[in-house]
Amino acid sequence: GDSVTQMEGPVTLSEEAFLTINCTYTATGYPSLFWYVQYPGEGLQLLLKATKADDKGSNKGFEATYRKETTSFHLEKGSVQVSDSAVYFCALLKNTGNQFYFGTGTSLTVIP
Amino acid sequence: DGGITQSPKYLFRKEGQNVTLSCEQNLNHDAMYWYRQDPGQGLRLIYYSQIVNDFQKGDIAEGYSVSREKKESFPLTVTSAQKNPTAFYLCASLLGHSGANVLTFGAGSRLTVL
Image 1: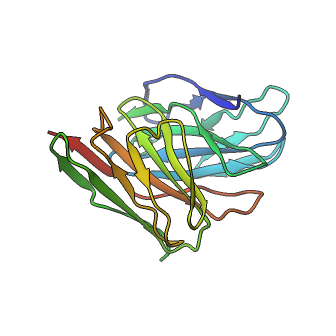
Image 2: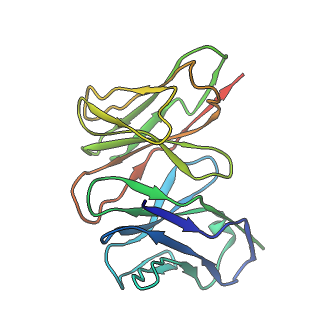
């Protein structure tokens, strides 16, 4: 079945460090891919998305490229800030139906 | 501004009681979802509804019930049959058209069983 696997956390980085959170997916067809972010005690917010192969989603310095050949959608940021501390979820939406599949989330803590 | 409103934000329940979590959206979205989130875990789908008066079970529907009498409302009832209801509950909605759909979430409701 369809699924998303993302890197287990927690991840702890110093401010200004480079961030990578790995995400791979299993799906038939051509799903859309998403990264959501969840700050403590809040709901999930869309961070970025990509709808087809080789698309790059970007927002707030975060980027992820839809790689169909490796079925991946890794999240990257060149220089993290303390305010980036949150839980990050990778997700996919199949191109048929309205069913989302979420990874288990990766907790990121950035220390000054 | 359009969005999803969940209430209450915090709820305490005694064992054996049913509780209802409210979810209202003014985005004119067709589909609505309920997810459960436990500490350190991902989101698990409880129920979803694509249109008014229709809904489907998700992966963990046992012990929960929903209704979709209006497009903007999708309340979730946690019944006494749910053996471990303490969790964070998230409601979400989706426009319903194919393509680059984005799932929009409410702020969540935290249920604690005493």
